[in-house]
Image 1 (cartoon, rainbow, N blue to C red):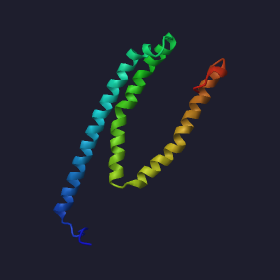
Image 2 (image 1 turned 60 degrees about the vertical axis):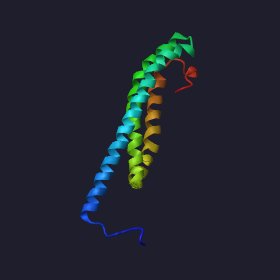
Image 3 (image 1 turned 135 degrees about the vertical axis):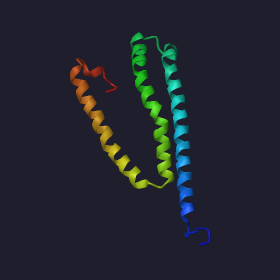
Image 4 (image 1 turned 90 degrees about the vertical axis):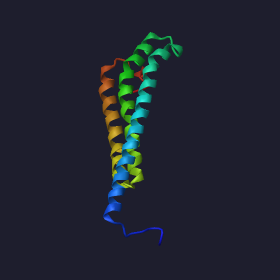
Length: 130
């Protein structure tokens, strides 16, 4: 095919690598900006919680979890951007292995947390979230 030129020179390959690095960096910068926006939105949550509930226990629990949410959201944009770069490079082998490991690792971790939390509570019937 004339469309796919397989006779690439060393300069063309260097240009392709340079362009790929630049594009990857731009994606990561966009992901960082997106993460910063998510953190900013998360920081507002404690101030709007009283509009949704008057229960002080719930308000306190929301305030306690906000730093963890902010930490997770701060890297979320860059992780999503990195995943997009990998998909763009067609590195599906790595992504497939990562998703397969998450498929087993995340439920295992969640079940361990549940196992460790339940014995410390006196009344299990009110724990619908665990």
